[in-house]
Image 1 (tube, rainbow, N blue to C red):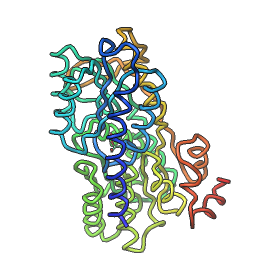
Image 2 (image 1 turned 90 degrees about the vertical axis):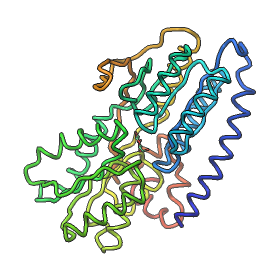
Image 3 (image 1 turned 135 degrees about the vertical axis):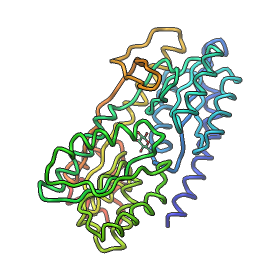
Length: 357
Ligand code: BGC
């Protein structure tokens, strides 16, 4: 089942890549090479559905509407590939790079190289610590963490509860902020006790399942709530809870409002997800990139501090939304997921019960 889904993803990624290559080159004839080109590099396809299902199509839409030349590629989790793609994009005339780095170090290296060649860079979603990007576009990631914490608290109530934390990749600055935000809420609840906490390398879902299974065994099943940093990691925890007959009894959080996450919520196996309207993020990044491409000064809404580089990066930060069973409808109404996809088969009745008609 899992294999099938991954297989399909790989095919659609390949198709999307080749489509973009043509689309990007044929498009935006206005100005030709002098105008330059925007290159976007997404990190992977395995840690979240968001990159190929949402980020890519929304960015594509925005660039097409503006009639600029662009090229969007996915590094498939390889930092080496990330570097190679960046080099190729610069060789092929990119003057602005929008980067969603796999980890801070490799993304910062790409930024330094780009800067040396006069190419501007924008951090997209993840801030490359110690980097030299010109701008940063993301959601307020500490706030995302707070939504996760508040969400778990809402699902648990104030009873005594043992909490296990499954954080994101230790090399992803967002994951650090998600954990900090969650702790800022949950550590204040005196009836809660942290019994386990671990980062999931590369946000790898398989490893998340192994890590959670170990936690479960070590605690003798005495885990009452799981702070999982995204829907994929949350689903891994749910798979172990299912094995132990505890799914639906132990609230699990998530992030990205993926189809799987939303269906887990409708099933009652996941307590909430954090919905980040990625269209807003893609539109903001595209707007910024286009302004930079045209040599204009883009609008930002604030700054984000890079503690490693000791600098403030001009930024646009957007607001995340906590989604529970009672407002899954909002994600559908927003056009983020299609009702037909979410409410297939067994989910038709569950959608109806959640007010999605
Ligand atoms: C993103 C999340 C995503 C995770 C794994 C984070 O940096 O903000 O939306 O789920 O990476 O890809």
